[in-house]
Image 1 (cartoon, helix red, strand yellow):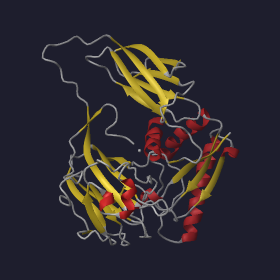
Image 2 (cartoon, rainbow, N blue to C red; image 1 turned 180 degrees about the vertical axis):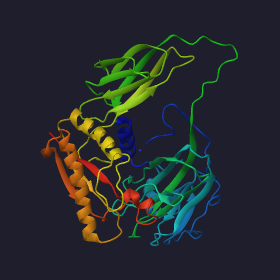
Image 3 (tube, rainbow, N blue to C red; image 1 turned 120 degrees about the vertical axis):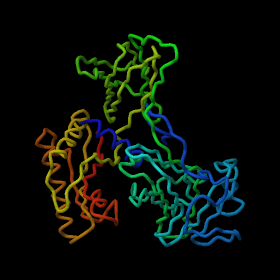
Image 4 (cartoon, rainbow, N blue to C red; image 1 turned 90 degrees about the vertical axis):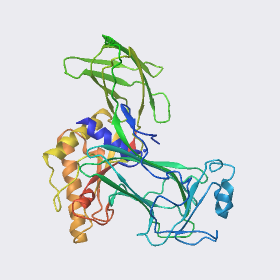
Length: 415
């Protein structure tokens, strides 16, 4: 149950299903990049765009240009010549259009059904006062809210997310600029990657080797800033649930243990951090394995959601699935008694605005009541209803807009 909570928190905190992660998770191998001309070294080819190719270097809304020296074609990027953009090869410079429907970049690729894919984009916006906002979608389903928080003038940031292909065999990847104010909303794109995450498969050697009876694990635990975390509690359970080991990570942030060579479940937990859960697999070759883990801090103001915590249309009731997911949240609150939450209720943006507002409050109230009925103090919970004023999906089918009918949690207090 807790695994689902940890997964969605990781995605949201680093932003998305879509946080910088350079490839597939531990235990998976990066497949080949399927994007044609992913770093724009071949110019403006291999992808569709509604934008016009800029040939005169006299910039206008809805235009694009490829160069390895942004400052030479766009005055506002001259300050970047000696910083991040120097020596990065070709980049795509975009002068954002006021027409939000225009596609900046689009490419269709074939995919394998029921496969996890990694999608990443190098992105740098021009002005802090009017940062460019991008909307990323696959098969016309938006992956997140339009984002602009990657502003670092003359420095790039990495947007990435994971996407499961489900039953489809083609992925239609699109990038749109959705900033309404076009003054100074220019930005740069580069190094677009889209590849499968394939489970690592151990290939048996020609000469058969006897599998080791035991493995020594060396765990290094820190926060996302690579800083030492004190008093991390480690719990290891066998996959068959026949035994478990509890221990504390030592003062150096390390935890060493020798185990029989079989699968295990590992959980790492510390005060004011989200619990981390991982699976340790048996090994045919290694007798010593080192693993690095980074725990995500419960910072004030952090917003997160819980997987499957969505509602049917015009409904505020808590299904059994929702209650199971809330059990993970209750566990987190019990483990961190100094944390308080603001619970934000949202509805679809269809229908009567007043009724939507009332419905969002009902959803918040029902979640609060369930938490308090399970031992969480009322003073630790505050609720706000937003109705349909903050949709994640502004258009599409009812199934696609289901993501709007949600509850979000904000950490608002740390004593």
